[in-house]
Image (cartoon, helix red, strand yellow):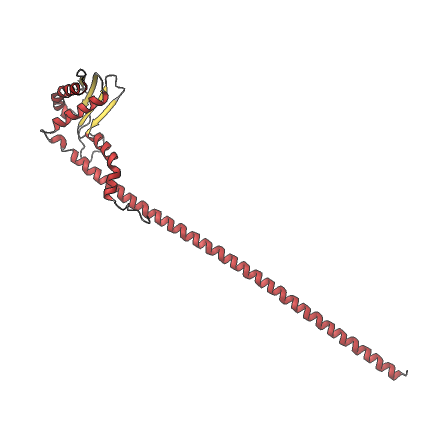
Length: 232
């Protein structure tokens, strides 16, 4: 083999090696690009998932916040309605208390009412001797009917008429006055056992309080037939 042939073979080998290297480089480049694209796609999908999760989290937060705001507003509305109802009921009671003030001004019926209140107290205490207190302006009325009440007690129970000691030194407070917020009494009496251990308040104010508490559900039912609650 002469030099020319050797040179030709060397060139062919160099060409072959170069071509094979280029093909190998191309394969590596393609593989690298494919791997890059796969990794890029995975990163994109991961970011999409992260963004979606973050969006769902914020959406839930917004939804929870809206529900809390709605619940807060609903409760506030209900409280306003309940407050308005309580105000109306209180005004009704205030009006009843004002009407009670005129009861003791009726000279014809008030003594009979006092007698009935005394008799009721005697029946409840069922004692042979009781103490009685009244307003100072009612003292004469009370003294005029106390014996009759005691005799009525005796007729109803078959027992002896009880002794009723009318306190002429310590009186119940007088009627309420405008602008005065102290203790007051629109009428009636307070009875107690002789030892003072049991006290029965049978004033007009106490009777109103009892009746009002007993009738409050019915009063509310009549005033607010639908319940009057927002969102109910």
